[in-house]
Structure formats: structure tokens, C-alpha cells
Amino acid sequence: MIKTGWVGGALALVLVATGCTAATSVGGEDSGGDSEPLAAFYQQDIEWQGCGEDFECGSYEVPLDYDDPAGERLEIAVKRLPASGSDVLGSLVINPGGPGGSGYDYVDAASGVVSRPVRERFDVVGFDPRGVGRSAPLTCLDSDELDEFVAMDYGGGGGGSDPADVSAAGLADMEEANRAFVEGCRERSGDLMLHVGTADVARDMDVLRAVLGDEGLTYLGKSYGTYIGTRYADLFPERVRALVLDGAIDPDMDQLELSVQQAQGFETALRAFVADCLDTTECPLGDEDATVDDGVDKLVGLMERAGEKPLRNTSGDGREVNRTRVELGVMAALYSESFWPRVRSALADAFEGDGTGLLMLGDDLYERSDEESYENSAAALVAVNCSDHPGPRDIDAYEQAVDQAAEEAPIFGPTLTWGALTCAYWPQEAVAEPEPMDAPGAAPILVIGTTRDSATPYEWAERLAEGLESGVLLTREGDGHTGYRKGSPCVDDAVDAYLLEETPPDGGTVCTE
Image (tube, rainbow, N blue to C red; front, side):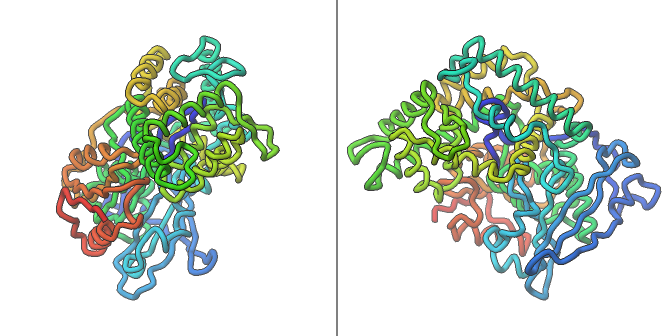
């Protein structure tokens, strides 16, 4: 998935673009032999070992800095499920999104992620991107510090605060906390924080393609994973076999534009959730006579009350369920319709003063139950986002963007926009320069957009498909985040045919089932 980022103190998005390294020589089996500085990376072998049931695990090496391939190296963890059939086409590399999501762990869910016909013909392969999980994990704060960072209020110490109207003390606290986050990255992760942008990840994936023995890359990327695929296609268009970019990210935006537009996506999804809730027999947002606007207003009132007086937390860990935690819990539930019954129950408790259910929803999204995963996924999320697209260095720009967000996405917009503030303090030398990505000469690339997607608004898929020279748009009418294997036979059949036969659906195909 593509994560919203930290609602209170840190990055609010999810997304996009390049690392701090230059393109330089990309190496590979066609790179000219041992004289090429990257050839040794492309010619290495993975020593696969069994790691439970039918899975195999291993690792391969990449340069920390592609401008200095003779320098420090990183070890990238990789896992695969070998194809179950005999007529194997090659490897299908998969990524769940994030930033900070583990492709290595995603392979464990291969039976749900990929259809049986595709699993019969492809080895399903996932890797942890650099800085994530088992691949030189980056950290910035410990768990207690992260808890404070996530739940920061906007009033400068106790009390409620409206993210659209931040006090001077609240603003000073946010600046201090975000600077401390970046300094924590420097202290704990050193130069790694300068080399975790998506361009580096895309280059790592091309090394993986080569060592797997595939002439062209076959790839399924969800959410932020679509940006990895887009970046790959633009760097290596001639090495594209078939790329599925599901829950697409538009790479042509800065951090603040992304924040506001993602907030609009969450508000579209929220209205769909409220409408569904009002059709149930016990909806905490209103009875059968209530309108969607009534239900949304009731939910906003709950957020405002939590800002003034935090809800109870019965877990015993001492955390306050303030407005930021209520918002995070609700947004987490909007990623999938499967969460809707759980959020209805959590909201019912919240209206009685107990915010524990909403707190747990937010914890699940960021893997807080595992301390190491929590620390790393938070750090990776911020580091990749801030490396990929520039954010303003002037805090006045954030204040102006919050005013815009309050008009265009009043429920989640101000909070998500403040979340991008960390990038104002990210090392300048680590931040990619904006550039168009159209992957000239690539084979057809399939882009999937879901009309009421919460985290990646449908308009992003439209723009990405249009911007890619060979982009083909497939639309899923529906709710939830991403489209493949989400209950639409139309989408699933189109994706399977594309992966297996390299034949995309007609551009503009709309799936209503």
C-alpha cells in the first residue's frame, strides 16, 4: 500500500521519484564486460536456500552510491516462490508499496496477491528495498520518540488545536520535532539516508532482474510500488517486458501538491464509507434518515472533541488518543472495504469515549506491534518521500498550502499537509531534481486506477498513463486501494492476460464488476 505518513508530526504522503545519484553507467549483461564499473554486480549469483514451505531466500549486493560503485556496498534481501508449473516464463517481481513496505514479506502472501495461472508460469520474487526491513534498515527515532512524534498536537503542548489554525507555540514545536527527526536519521543511519531514493531502488531492481536471468523485467507494483516501476521504466525502457502499476502515483507533483490531492482521495473514500455505514442497521454515524453530510459532520465533531479532550485508551500503554490519532485510525480503515466493519465498531466505542479501537487501527497500518518494523517503516517512509520530490524550505509555503488544503480537503488536508514538513529539513544533496518520466520506447505498461481509491486518487492513474509513452489505463469502478485481486474478474483477467501473453487490454477499458 502507499502509506499516508505521519499524521501529526511527519510526512503526510507516500510517494514518488528519484534519488540523489546520477544516472551514470547502468551496467548489466550488455554493459561491455569487466571494464564496466557495475558489471560485477550484474554478474553475481544468488545462493538460494530454503526458508519455509516452498519458499527460497537469499541476497545480492548493490553499491550504496551508483556514482561510486567501488565504494560501500549494501546487501539486498530477496525471497521467491518458485513457479508451480513446468513451462516457466521467468520471474515476476512484486512490491506492496509503502514507502517502507517489504517485498520480501509480500511473497508470503503470493497466493492472494497473484492468480494461480500466473504463479504456475512465474517465480514470484520480492525484495526489501534498500533502507527497508532486511536490506540495511534505516532508523531515525526509537519507538517512544516516534509515539510522541506521531501524536503531536497543534497547540504547542496540551489541548486540542485545529490543524488548519496552528498556534505559534504549535508551529515552533512542529519545527523542532521535524528537525530532530532528520538529525536522528543522520545520527543513526549516516550516509544511507542520502541514498534511499526511488531511482536507487529502481537500479537495484535492474541488478535483480539480471541476476535472476531475465532479459526483460516483469513486475507488479502496488501503490508506491508503482513509482518504483515508473522510475524503472524511465531508466531502462528497453528492459521492460510487462509492468503492472496498480494504485498509481503521478510523479509530476511536489510534496505539497501530493499532500492535498491525497487528502482529497481520502475524503472521497470517507464519503463512500459513510454512505455504506448509513445503510447498515447499527451505524454510529447516524440512523436511516441521516445523509452522508450528516454522518461526515458527526465524525468531524468526534475529531474536534478528541482534540479538546483525548479519548480513553484502555490498552494500558499510556498513549493519548488525540485528534491526530483519531484521524490516523480513520484513514487507515479507508484503505480497504474489509476494514469497514472494524472501523464502525471502533467509532461506536469512540462516541462513548473509548478511542482504543481507532488507536489500534493506526498501529496496524504502521506495524507498531513490532518495535523494529515500526521504527524502520517510519524512517523509510519519510526518507524515501523526502528524497524523491523536493519540498519547500520556507515554512511560510507550508502555512499557505495548509490554507489551500483547508478549502479543498477540509477534513484531512491540513493534517496531511503539515505532515510534509519534515522534507523542509532533509539534506539538500539527497533530494532529486524534478524531471518528466515517459519511458520512451518501452513495451506497453499497464496502469490501474480505482475510481474511489483513498490513498492514490484515480486522477493520478489517468495522468500517469497519459504521461508514459506506452501507458495503457485500466479503470476499476469501486472502493478501496488498488484494483488487482480485489474482487473484479474483469481486472484480474486483464492483468493475467497481460502478464502471461504481454497483451494489454484496450486503453480506456472500464471494469464495473
